[in-house]
Amino acid sequence: EAGVTQFPSHSVIEKGQTVTLRCDPISGHDNLYWYRRVMGKEIKFLLHFVKESKQDESGMPNNRFLAERTGGTYSTLKVQPAELEDSGVYFCASSQWRARYEQYFGPGTRLTVT
Amino acid sequence: RKEVEQDPGPFNVPEGATVAFNCTYSNSASQSFFWYRQDCRKEPKLLMSVYSSGNEDGRFTAQLNRASQYISLLIRDSKLSDSATYLCAGESGGGADGLTFGKGTHLIIQP
Image 1 (tube, chains in turn yellow, red):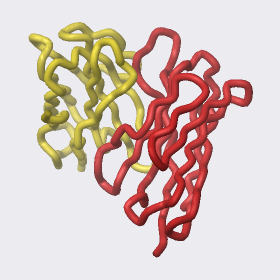
Image 2: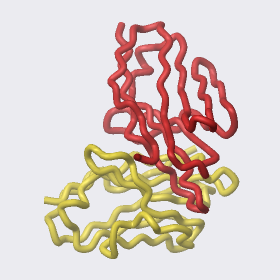
Image 3: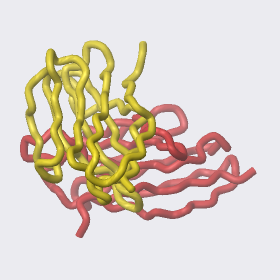
């Protein structure tokens, strides 16, 4: 069974530019999560989708971040405009509906804002 | 106090030894906890779930102590391949479905 995939694996952009990260969850997983790890800090929750609906976006840093999951399959996370403090590794995770806390992570996208 | 705290280590342990490390949590509403293993520059991989008092899977045993609000991970007969960072995570509680992670404990198994 294919795992969670993320694209791109790395992205280097300049401050003020826009970047869109993509996540494809494990097939059949209704729950999809975005997390971020900033250097030296712990992994932090950003938001949670159930199918195409946002269930919890309490972890989103500010309105420069926009997540979508049209059709309840893959998800995108857009950062516009990017700031230096947005640098970090963005992980996507997915889980089955009945075991929502058993989350399986993708390889992450390493974002560097210069 | 941080929500989930772990000793960052590193723990240097000889191959074949038993190693244990703890993770403390502050959110008493959390019901479920998890141990993840993360190799350098890789994603966290789910190692064990801890829903009640404990869980055992081969050489790995996880225990939950609700009274003292900590979770432990015990690794028996450690292998070189066990070298990694071990992340503790708990459900955030309050209806939120995200996990709250610790910073991780770095384990180095030495030959």
